[in-house]
Image: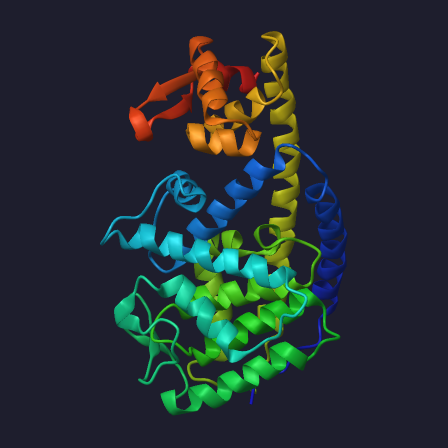
Length: 358
């Protein structure tokens, strides 16, 4: 037995209608062929992942997350927080592929594989396998605040969850279905560890399969990371102290709708800021009569000290041309070179920051 999808109250219904307008506008903005979208997508993805892994105690800065997500940095052995970010990024890349797959079907293997993607660095926690032991959620004082269903019930419950994901409540709004998917998975707590991460990833996949927004713009992990106490409180109110699907999930769904509203407003603001920043960087390049591609290098540096490889890839130029371009930006006093050889990076100078700020 699973939780019933609730009827929306008047406030939640109004919020959902407002959200639909915002998501439609965000869809139009993010699907425009704007040159700044690549950098913005990477930034949003990195922030989302840093916040979601941070909920479970794996803390890295947004800058570190961006380097790890783009492959500019790699996690070392034993660097569990950085490994968590790398693995979460792998799971979200998998979500992006499944979102576009016309032959996609919800199967138990989908959830198991996403768990393996996100938790493969935790070999002692059986990544990619249902748990075979009891598990509970403990608060900061060591008290059990939620006791998950017995391990023996997990396979059957997850079959129900998968069947619901494939065929259940298909007439419900996708944001409501995504919230319920999150609740179903996290309440069963099917894994020894990583249940929160996987529940949030599954929620993102439900949203991405809707096709309106790509995973990085559809998810609410950033909001949940910034409002973790409220997030946990709403989950606790929804599923109680033990698994009880007779409880009303209305407040949980309403909370998720509010989170989506906040995220949609924030993403729209970020898109508008990115457009303004690009225009300012174009003026910097035009003043020096540089080719348009120089703007890409300047913008990359502003977010995460760029390197020759990432600049060459995004600007679609040779490594030699990229080196020459970056050297000219350094000589102009807009970039600062750090490191040597393969570790060479290019950070924004104070002059570049001032030009963008002005």
